[in-house]
Image 1 (cartoon, one colour):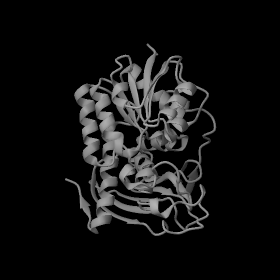
Image 2: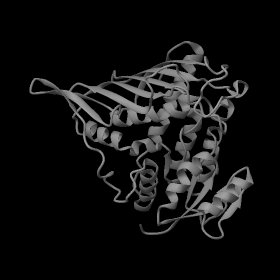
Image 3: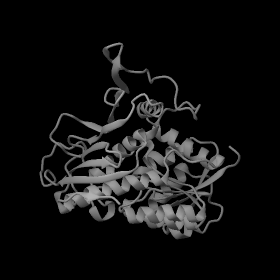
Length: 360
């Protein structure tokens, strides 16, 4: 690395403490110099635990952005705030890592994309699931043409009874949706990335709020409050791409099922198939016999990282800072995340209208 990069954290809640700040602190070429949260105590706590000596604390993110010494901003706020904070940060000359999803709406996501281009700054979105060893292997197989023409895929984000009861996850105004925009977005991102297909043609979607009013739920994090549960508890999408490929997306925080698969995908091509259901598996036919290939993923990490950690969040932060340092593209391009947001928005719209949504 050619320099020490100074980072400002905007939003010091769960995702910042659980992912961003611990992984960033492991890097030797960054300094977290500023922390902002509307609850000042959270920013103070973050500064003490993760900041350099003398790290600044703010409750107004616009004041943080005035600090010309800050190179990079991480936006770790509720979804409603992603777009305008990111745009302001880009306009202030900062590179931006914004948590997933890119934004509540495709219009907001496009504004973020345009701001990055206008200011010549890097923008990436928090799809660290791409750094998982299983999808890394499958992605390489896809890129090498081993699956052939991928024409059917499943993007799975299903929990049985694991509704997040903290923060604003259940608040439609703050988040824009429930499990679809929370965990379904990860599964869809990995699927599109592996297929390298970002041209949707048509979407049909359904969503349900069937279990949200129940009590004594046996939820993993305790009973939720039905009155605060203003988002869907399940949503499903049928996506047709321009080249005819079909993707089925399923997402739920609370479904009465034993088929629990979160943030994984399966792909079916003309030469072979692949899935993440038991490690990484490739299936096909060789020498007139069906086969299943299951690589050993226990040794070695991704190509660009020689560090000891194989944690996707650690790998994601490393490649992000490395991309800025080398002036190369990060793993997650904003143009790709924009398409993810377009599809999620179309699923919600179709679910509300009962009609298919077509893309231009």
